[in-house]
Figure (cartoon, rainbow, N blue to C red):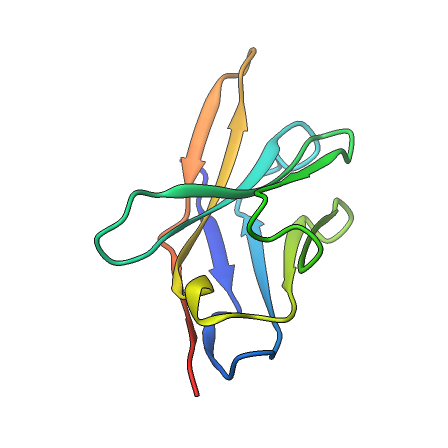
Amino acid sequence: QVQLVESGGGLVQPGGSLRLSCAPSGNILRIATMNWYRQAPGKERDLVATVTSGGSTNYADSVKGRFTLSRDNAKNTVYLQMNSLKPEDTAVYYCNAAHGSFPIFNYWGHGTQVTVSS
């Protein structure tokens, strides 16, 4: 079973920055679509950003221009750089690795808390 190890969450003031990291325990990064989701208290889990195995990215409208998702296959890690953070970005952020054809998989991390508050 592959595990996704997340790090980088914490408390930051509005306007600040954080960088989240996600490192799979197995060698899946080169074929996986990597996603970051977030879930605020009392709300559904929403997709924030996606990077495909080919490096194409897509972002939720709410984070476009502020968040950047990148992948470093050599380090087996993806990074979510979050700038100009707002209180509404406060949530638990989850890393997800998915592959829709053989080998099919869909792995989740345990989540990391991001709190934006003064």
